[in-house]
Image 1: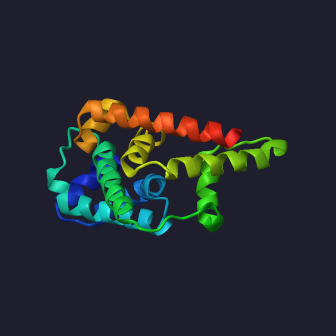
Image 2 (image 1 turned 30 degrees about the vertical axis):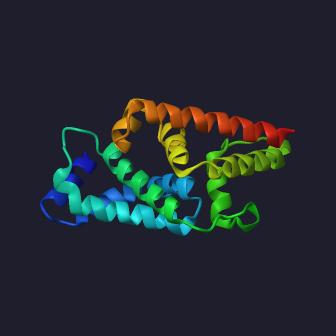
Amino acid sequence: MEEQNAIVQLKQGKLNGLEILVERYQARATQAAYLITHDRASAEDAAQTAFIKVAERIQQFDEARPFAPWFFRIVINEALKLAKRMKRQTSLEDVDEDTAALAARLADSAPQPESTLEAKQIREHILQAIHSLPPEQRAVVVMRYYLDMSEADMSAQLERPLSSIKWWLRDARKRLSQLLAYERN
């Protein structure tokens, strides 16, 4: 209900409605963008740009539909644009505390004490494997496994044929499987 009120306020030109949406979605938007860009600053830029676009394009939003898929489509598109433009890549040696905290949130929230080191290594391997994927494949992996979107929703959000989404997911899974199997050996 609070979200609907925020949208109504935004449509009336009141920016305090945006504050409510930022509070609700900022962390998740930044995390989703980070999983695509693998760069904290770029992820924050993508999330911020997405909120600006929401404010600019709120009149285009159909209130009969849920807000989150519309919003995350903007986030994913912004993250993809930034990922394609990025020229540098962050190695695991450059992982900062914020990245480590994000990796910790992606893993099991209650690891056993004796498996903490192993879990950390697994998280690092998974993040490294995801980062090695092309931006489009990273986007569909994030949308599917982090945002829990269906293939049909991803197709609609990215404005790509369902066959492309399935192909990207298939290739991403295959590549991740190969990379993770190689890391275990």
